[in-house]
Length: 278
Image 1 (cartoon, helix red, strand yellow):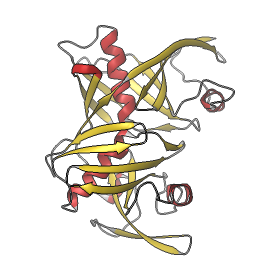
Image 2 (image 1 turned 180 degrees about the vertical axis):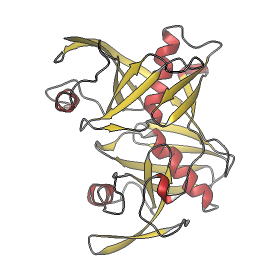
Image 3 (image 1 turned 90 degrees about the horizontal axis):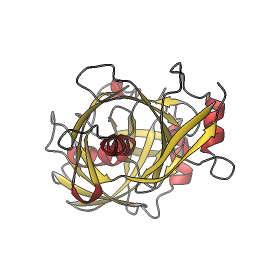
Image 4 (image 1 turned 180 degrees about the horizontal axis):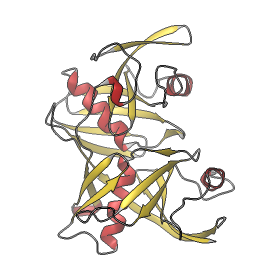
C-alpha cells in the first residue's frame, strides 16, 4: 500500500506526517523503524499519524510514534508541525485551531513569520503522572545512576521528563546519562532526559535525550519541561528563550496551575510516497 507523507521539522526535530491509512491501523512498528533509518529509510525522530477528529470542536486527532516504532503520548514540536500543515490545508480559522491527542487537547496559533505556538497544558509535577517511583512530590529527587547519584526534577508534559541542571549543556554527558536515566527502573514507562544550562533568568541552553529516539536537535516538550522545572526552582522568568542545537524556541509559563506555551518555527522539507504493508 502506498502511503503519502509530508516531511517536516521544527528546528531540526524532524517528522513524517501522514493521514491514517485505510482501516485506521498505523504501519507496523518494524516498518516504522525501517522508515526512521536515516541511511536506508526516510529518516525522522517521530512519525505523526492524523486521524479524523473524535470531537466536533477539534480539527484532528493525532498519534505519535517514536523512531523505535513505539507509540508515545505527546510531542510539542510535532504538534506545532501538524498545526502548520493543517493551516496550509485551510483548517485554521483566523489562525487558530484545536487538536486532540492521546495526552488531551492542544490549542494552536499560527503566528507571523512562520512561527507556530501551541498550548501544552499545565505541567504536572505529581510523580504518578509520569509515572515516577517516588514516595512523595519534591522539587528535586536524588537518582542513582551507574553507582553515582544525580539530582533531577521530574514533570509530565503529557509525556514524562527528567531534567538535570548542568554547568554546561555542551559538556553534559548526554550519551552516558541519557540512556541510563531513560531506562531507569524508577521510570516504568521510560523517560525523556533534559540537560539544562541556565544562562540567565530569561535564557537556557538545552539538550534532550528523547525516549525511544536518542538525542535530537530540538524537543518541544523537553523545552517546556526544563522551563517548568527552572521556574519551580525560582531561577527563571515567565518568558524564556530555549537554545537548542537546531535553533531557539520560546517557552512562556506564568506559573503553577497555568498553561505553558511553546513557540517556534515549523517547516515543510518535502513530500513523498512510500510503500508499506497493507
